[in-house]
Length: 266
Image (cartoon, rainbow, N blue to C red):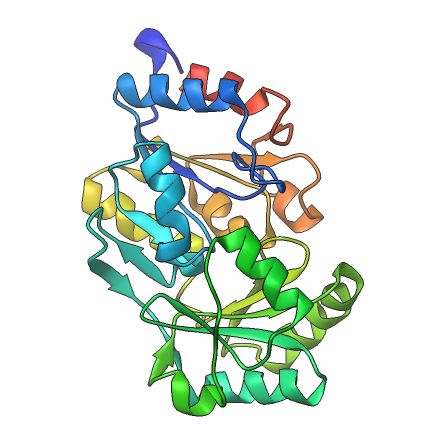
């Protein structure tokens, strides 16, 4: 907490739905409180499902200097973009998921060298591109374009479709993929050892910060592992029940000023 009682040294901060609104707005109160917390010595690491290339704008805006946890924890990148941790989905396994999506006429994203790869120009793909700030690269065949691994795969579909797919995909690739949502319309997959929790553990160890002195704040199913690991787990109101159940504290969504209040206490 603030002053002499302060004990938290590292904050893992989700971006979308936590400090960045769904309309890509940022509450000035949150931004000012984040800067003040950093000025007091709090280490702040962006911890996002975004590719590094889609996160760097926010990292620079918030003047964050710690390594970036991106691709749901599949990668940890230094401030200069160099790789510190990298867990990719093997090509053959990725193609199983891509085939599943193709058979159901679902939009699916893959990634290579921070490029967003898609096979078709779709409304879902355009929405994702707008939100992520990445221009999609339309390729004839992901099988040929993807490379030996991809950090993650994302199926983009309406909320009702994602809600139906989530248990199906989790069961089908149980033990082979970590499956979660970031935003309600994004179903995201990484290898089991790649999630925000394992990435936060890696980063805390690298920075010499004990688990008890870490804070994690997030709103999506993909945030659950880091909330479960952190010394203080803070979920955003409206998060799925599986996220709320591991939270020590719940704050309001972007625009309410609750994140600023939390930051002022750290």
